[in-house]
Amino acid sequence: MIPMPIIVGAPRSGTTLLRFMLDAHPDVAIPPETGFLTIGGDFAAQDDELREAFFGAVTRYPSDMPAWEDFGIPGEVFRAALSGIEPFTVDEGYRAFYRLYAARFGKPRWGDKTPVYCFCLETIASILPEAHFVHIIRDGRDVCLSWRATWFSPGRDIETQAGSWSGFVESARRQGARCPHYLEIRYEDLILDTRRTLEQVCAFAQLSLDERMLRYYEGAPERLREHATRRRADGTVALTADERLRQQRATLQPPDRDRVAGWKSSMCVDEQARFDAVAGGLLAELGYERRQP
Image (cartoon, rainbow, N blue to C red; front, side):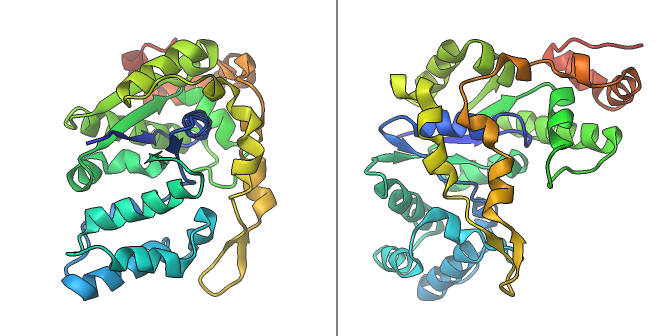
């Protein structure tokens, strides 16, 4: 089967950056975060009931703040595509979604980028055997610094953030070791040696490197416009489009070397020590420099 690259990683580790780079390839379309692949094993109905249950689960995911508007696919178009699948299966239902999304841009292939999939690589691989997971890892201290400016930080204290970063990374590595198609790259390499790192990713996904991937930022503004205002199930605004855009402004520029190892100048000694107490072992395992005051 043709590989489907699925980008995973802790939030603020460069997953969106890598998404835009891959999406700039003329053959690949990668949608905003989906999340609904995690519900793939929850369907017990058969035939038409399964089809309708699948449609509702995908288009209303997540139930508290549905993201369907981000994808630009009319619900009736998706429903019609599902109706054409005989017999209906969940895996073909997912492929129908990605096929429709890629068709919006005239592209024959598709992928995904969803950080939370770090916790369900094996489930996804069992549903979509073409899944090729690209796990991007960033120094956890820089991740924590980046979280400080977001609305979705897992917590405000360094211990909670360090624990969350560790959880994402360790889960993806553990499950990735049991998946047939798994690649690890470093955010730092993507920034400092972009071409070589993209060549590695392209080889893994059976793509040829296209120069447009290095100029991803030219198309980033249009892609970010997909991030619509997010509304709760009752219709009230949970997050405006501008609030969502502000979290990704760095992707509008070429790779910035100043975003590498920023913790050395921006994280106080006390926080460095507290981070190390929680996740220093993982830093060492990954080969990152440790400072232990």
